[in-house]
Amino acid sequence: MRGGLRSFSFFLLFCASSLTLAPFRLAGANSEGDALYTFRRSLSDPDNVLQSWDPTLVNPCTWFHITCNQDNRVTRVDLGNSNLSGHLVPELGKLEHLQYLELYKNNIQGTIPTELGNLKSLVSLDLYYNNITGNIPPSLGKLKSLVFLRLNDNKLTGPIPRELVGISSLKVVDVSNNNLCGTIPTTGPFEHIPLNNFENNPRLEGPELLGLASYDTNCY
Image (cartoon, rainbow, N blue to C red):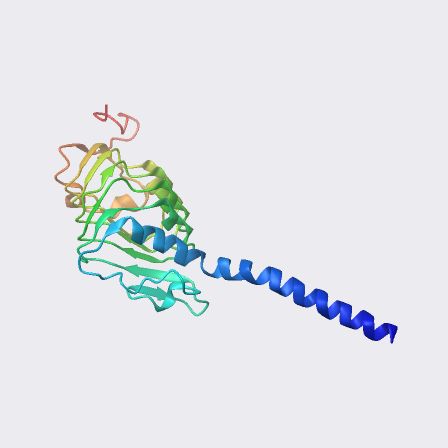
């Protein structure tokens, strides 16, 4: 009898523990949805392309314009040419499995959050044809899987971060039609980037001369 009571007590303890932990598991599963919904709240969406973004769901994998992997983690955000306006949010940096962030041809303003440097799986960052201002964050140099970095046709200022030189996977960089300053890197992946991907930056002085000039010339 005593053994039966002990077993029943363990059963009750297990049930209580499960109930206690369940909300935390749900919150963890929905953390990516929370991040994306924070982004949605920062945007104006006149065409209702984000209408399916329901924050009450366990995860955002059923939302339109979102792709997930087999573990229900977000790998793509495809919102290019969607007539969106607003700004990027730091919470986007929490999408740790994200590979593609496609937000080109909208009216996104404000700066690029430094937190995007936390997207260690990111392959493509396409923010071209927006109205983004401020500097290119040096933290993007932490994106060691990045292949495509297209920031052209914005209002970016400041130098091209030298941290980008360390991304060996980088194949495409386009920062044309901004207001960047200083010089163009010539080492690492930048050896193979055509110069027309840097054109129409009136304060950008051309390829750097290693050992002869500071790259941030004309930035102040």
